[in-house]
Structure formats: C-alpha cells, structure tokens
Length: 276
Image: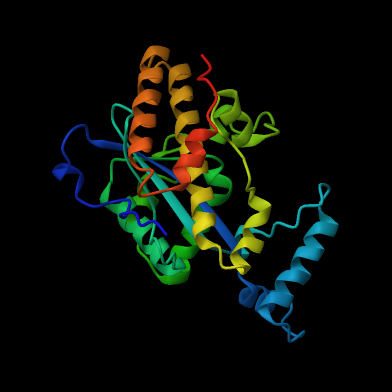
C-alpha cells in the first residue's frame, strides 16, 4: 500500500512558491447500514447488510435507470482525495486522506482541518454541491466538527469559494450532461472511467479493497483537475498554451509520484493526446 501525506502539511504562508489557491476534491462513500435500519426499518430487526440490501432493492425499483444508489444522508465517506493547486494553476500536491488506514472519522477530520486552514482557497469539485460537500458536511455534523469559515464563505451557490464544474458546464442545471466527468475527461484525452466505476465501490468495500477505492477516487480527482484547467481556458484565466504547459508539468509531477502511488502508472498509461 502507498502512503500519502495529508492534504495540508503547513500553513499557506510557510509554503515556498505560489500560494495555494484551489483544493480539487473528490469522494467515495458506502451506505450506512446501521443508520438505514434505524431510520427506514426500525421494526424489522435487520442486520446492517440486510438493511442496505433492502434499501437498494427499493431504490432500484423506484429508479427509471435501475440505479440502486442511496441518498447522501445514508452515506459514509470512505475516500477523500485532494489535489492541491497553486495560484498559477500548477499541482502542488496529491493526497488520499488518512492513507493507508482510510478511517472515515479521520478522513473527515483531516479534510475539514485542511479547508479551515486554507481560508482563502476555493474548493473545486464535479457535482460537489449535489453530493460531495453534503456528504462531508453531514459527516462533520455526525462527528461534531466546526466548519465556521467554510459556512461563512463557501455555501453561496453563485459567489462562494466553491467551483462546482458540473454547475459551471450545465449553466447551473439549465441543461443536462449525460456522461458527466467521464465524458469531459475523455474529450481532453484523459482516462476518465477505466476498470472501476462508482457502482462497484460498495462491493469493493465489502471485499476490503479500500486501497483500490482510494486509487479510483484519486484518478477521478485528477480528471477533475484537468477538466478544471480547460474551463479556465474558456473563462480566459489561462491560454491554451499555458494549459498545455501545465498539463506537461503535471504529467512530469505525477510520473515522479508513481513509486509512492503505483496507481498513477495505470492512470498515465491511459492518457491519449491532449485535445486543443
């Protein structure tokens, strides 16, 4: 198993080079069977696993697409990955929080400690308003963590310190984006979904494959970073030449991390040519 340092290792003012400006974040979660049993089936005396199975069956029957995904309020985070990005849009660090133990309470604590430390930093997610941030906010509620600065600065949909790329691409929900992050990543020649998809995470969790889940989450976080770069071309914050240089530098950085994070070899091997 690889180990990675926390998303935050020092106060921003102590870091050399450009200041940290963005935290690109992605999460993975599994259903909380104990909570499901207590809330949805209090009189059925179901085990946590049986409560999850029953809830998933009900969700599948109610879904027009056959999805068995359960609401965020019944989910527990088991992976939070962060790409720390400088004000010049270059990668400063990649991390899977609380590696290699991946304990939910510690994952959540380390994430919010980092967010509170970097008060001026913008969060970058893909569908973070719809899932990742509610997941982490509810986990903070569960564990009794303070999110004072975040609550004051990042929960304004249009002007807060949070860039939700799904919101941005769809004009805040005015249109649909079938294919989601996978579609946008593949437009740019980045891997997108390869061998693992989100609907496999719970089965992998039951098989004890936490490292693989976090590797998958990290790859999604990197895809989110590269999609973010292209959106900054569209907004005029960087040029396509600058984007290509940032992608080249990012690849060199990630190649240097493959000894520490072996999953990056597979990720880099799935790249196509950069699309401009």
